[in-house]
Image: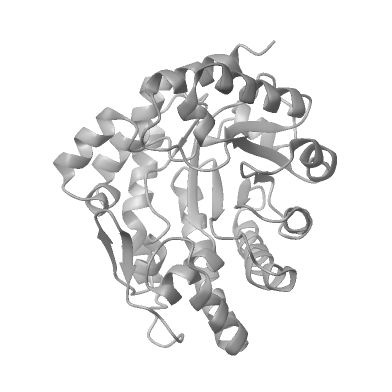
Length: 344
């Protein structure tokens, strides 16, 4: 059963005040209870692939802070794994993959995809049972361009060079890669909605620094296809896009063309512009600087107040401009929540 939560009301373009609040990476390393469970699990992948443990991690920040949404504990690199590209997580360095230079060898069997991605679906079912009707459940996946950067480079981080070279030198082959990734992402998000997610977010973490024509071809086009595939199965599905650190023209094109219901803004996006331009087409989400959250005190209060003042009267979800950082004090998260929910 789907509930009309505050967050879903915003995705239906209804202004809600105070705005609903959740934080990207809210289930993670800043929480002592997460670090304790992570140590017991032995590895990050063990947490992701255990529905029991992933459910517990997803619910931890809801129990502690009462956020308006829970986002499933998983990882964007489950998609390459489902496609037959193993991922190794190196402590202190991040993910490692065998670099991909062509589209041969991908596992395109959807039955295999469903089996490989099944832990996420079971986790969603369990989390839904552990949430009250007022809390939105969010599923997610990485976007094709971002996943392509990992596959082409064989590692994580903002490493676009290998993917860009592939796209420039062999545009047909690279387009085929994006299509394969997009099909798997759409499949995954559709199944997450069917497993209990109320909405899904598409993370385009490495959208910055692309020329306009490349952004249109490699970011906007594949995302538009994913949204269309989802809506073919779930016409009323609510979808949030996060084209992190796009140009203003990029954000505007993304809002106009992709069909998402909301755009999550990175830290540098100007809010007056976003309200005047983007909010005519989509709801907005964002965009507190995660460093301001670490700083706390007056700096945090002023940063929160500036966002609230800029976006009052707009369909808006309060969030960060990127994920919460490990060294964030718990007291500052509580300060943030109090400031947002106490907004008059």
